Amino acid sequence: MNPQEPPAIQMVPIRQSHPELLKTSIDAIQTKLLILKRGIEELLFSLDANDKVSWPAFMAKCSSLAADLSSIQTALRKSMVTNGNEDNGEFLKSQLLLPYTISPEVNPKLLELTEQRVPCWNHETAPAFLRTKLDPRVEDDYLQLEAEANQYQNAVKKRFDQVSLMNKHLESVVQAVNEQMTRLNRNADGTKMTYNNQQTETLIRTVYTGEGLNSGGRKR
Amino acid sequence: MASTDVPGESSSGSKPPPARNFQVLEAVLHASIYDDHKDQLIERLKGMTDPFSSSFEEHEMVFALTFPESNEGPDVQLRLRRRFNLDLWHVRYVGTPIADKCPAVCRASIDSVMYTKDMMDFVKHMGFRLIYEFVMKGWVFTRGPIKILVYKLCTTDKPGIYSKELIKPFGTSHIVEASIPVENEDTMKYSKLLKDFTDQLMPLVEFRKVEYFRPRTGQFAKSS
Image: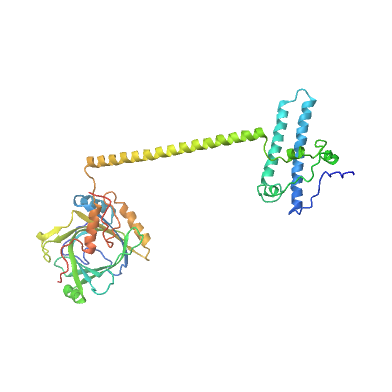
């Protein structure tokens, strides 16, 4: 009646499309995360060890950690496949993650793997780890920001419409003023026109088609 | 400096047509200028064109072969020009303009000069009938291959009689015509050359492509 200990890692017999690819990408993530973890540990040790820690050194370490985090983020976003095309994380996104066993018992293998941090994979830890939703506070902030952005967008659109309407009005005003100016100028100068296009047309038609001439049709 | 023409002396009419080769295609642009301003234009042209220019006064008669039964489009027109009291005839065939997107009117044009006393009989027996006639009085200028004519159209009250008293001007403007022969049927290139030259005469005159072969549309941009 000894229930079989749930293994720490369950090999699920699901056919994967690229098992080796998956393994390499997960290994890559893991190494990066380990480096990050080391960094954080060092930071905390340094704080514990001395009362006063050199501020610039501390800041430097923090910034390097931040850089590591952002590099992990970009890597995840692009593709963890080291030499593959950038598929924007499609490969990883397409992988399924299923919790196979959830049990309330303490799992020593899990303990070992996670360095004594996660004792059991039960109905509390599993959802916490597999959570995809943002922290509620973070989520609220996010929603607020989005609402603000939409508001701004509306305001921007309104301003844009106002400005373009203004432009149209100005255009018509300018055109009217221009017309009036030219009209006045022309009257003042006393029609400086040296030609008349209608006359051109009439005359050319007369020359080439005989329009308007009163002779015609007589034999010599 | 322009040389005025000596009446009575002429070898090929007042237009210098090339006696040897036929100009088959030409590109033409038209403009007009009020009579009072024509002197300005003449001065301008004298500055811009070759030194040789001459004035002319010629009587032009336009004959056409009509085919009443067939629908062969516009009639074949023949234009005969002569100075009064001379037996020298400048015969010109002007074809229908090609309707295309050129900035100038492009049409076929063949010139020929002959001396004969029986011209009227000849054309009558060929089947041509006179459809209209007029007198043109003006100047011709050249600039390389470009030919510019500035002339006034006149008619007579009594048909057939062209004495000095009866010649009346038609309209209040002079016609300005600029043409250039087109080689290799490259109408675009030569039309553009012509347009570039004629644009230099703005704003005194505005050269346009007058599509006289189309029916009148009725409206026009500028009004006096």
